[in-house]
Image (cartoon, rainbow, N blue to C red; front, side, top):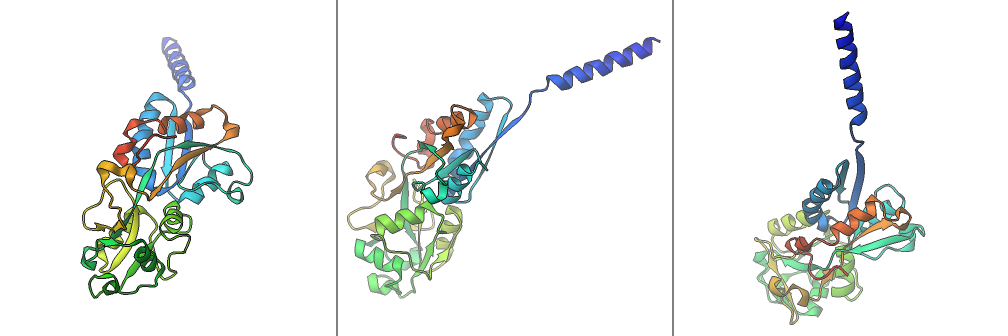
Length: 263
């Protein structure tokens, strides 16, 4: 009979161990692709400090981030643009700023142009100039690259660089920062815009009027997005709020192009 008691004891041990296993809770973040590098670096530290929680991160654009968090389909949304009532459906969101993210106008090196006036950047991006020769560059057609309508970067470019005018409808749409960079690098005559704290290799960053971007003085650059994290006010001080405020407070945000105090 001893083997029966041993088997029963083993069964009880396994059962009690199963009960003792902590329950895993899952949180989700969705929104602006420009912040994904920072979020993917910071989230594992929050997970380490909160055993039993896992966090998934995905892009989709600023508007999608606001819409999805408002509808309760994700816990935290990330957006470069101020939420509109038609996106939130009247749901109250809490904003946690991440800082300033420079927006650079980048061009293929073969254009032969590294500085333009404010009027010239408007003419290039809106399609009124169709050859780089018209602004002192090479005899190449201007190929405009843009971002989807849901992009916060596009909104900033149109409002701050183009005085409210729209990027040409002939622009080739790129779905992410990475896709934009690759497209401009590989396309002779290309011009586009990138959310980045550094000037990537393989492209030129345009000086606009009297302003040229310098990463050592990033806050002096006048063209920037202001990404922020959003969670539903109804979540109170729960794990989504804790996650958002943790991500908004990490000093190494600067390493990912997010400059200035998160305020």
